[in-house]
Image 1 (cartoon, rainbow, N blue to C red):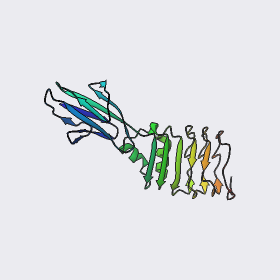
Image 2: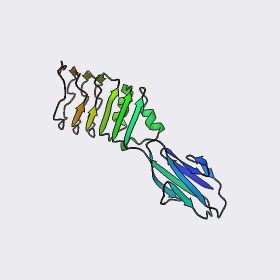
Image 3: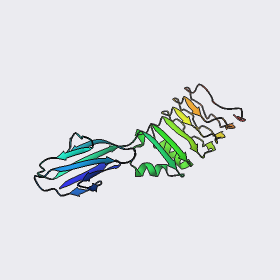
Image 4: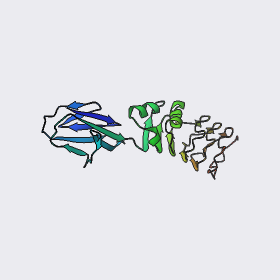
Amino acid sequence: ILTIHITGDGQVQYQGATLTDGGQVRITNGENALLSFVSNGDFSLDSVLVDGAQVTITNGIYQITNMQADMVVDVTFSSPTNLILHLNGGELYTILQERQIVGANVRSLTVSGRLTVTDFTAIKSVLTNLQSLDISQTNITELPSNVFEYKQSLREVHLPLTTTRIQERAFEGCYSLTTVTGCDNIQELGYVCFSGCNSLRVLPFGDKLKKL
């Protein structure tokens, strides 16, 4: 019996059949088995272990030769470091869970569509090493309070031109932040919203700013 264990988003194919996590096939003793590894979406094949030993994969294929006993194949598909998503609002956390995306691996996120407070919470708490965030194609008109507070990995944020308000403490303690764009129509900055942003040298606000 050949048993397949899969971590991440992908499948193993054997003789035209698709095997998912926990899948099994019966192979006659002495036969060969040709396995193909197929990643989904932005995932990529990271490693394959056969009975605990790492094996070399060539062009996404591994051949088991002269199988004599039960065997376990552990396959790991690594999650992407750069994500591009279209959201309808409130679903970011669910997408990350369903696609088994490791939040700590994501360095860059580009989002279009609709963002809600729930999505911002996921960005702050799950994408712990996020460096670049592009939400310039979303519907937001303001950044919520404390939305990126002390998110020290964050380096750049691209806002939509519909943004008119950045609420209090939104970027407080973002020591690595160097770039914020899309601020042409900002009218109001909340209390200490950029406090501690020592790497932010230029405040890119237009002449519509009315309240600090």
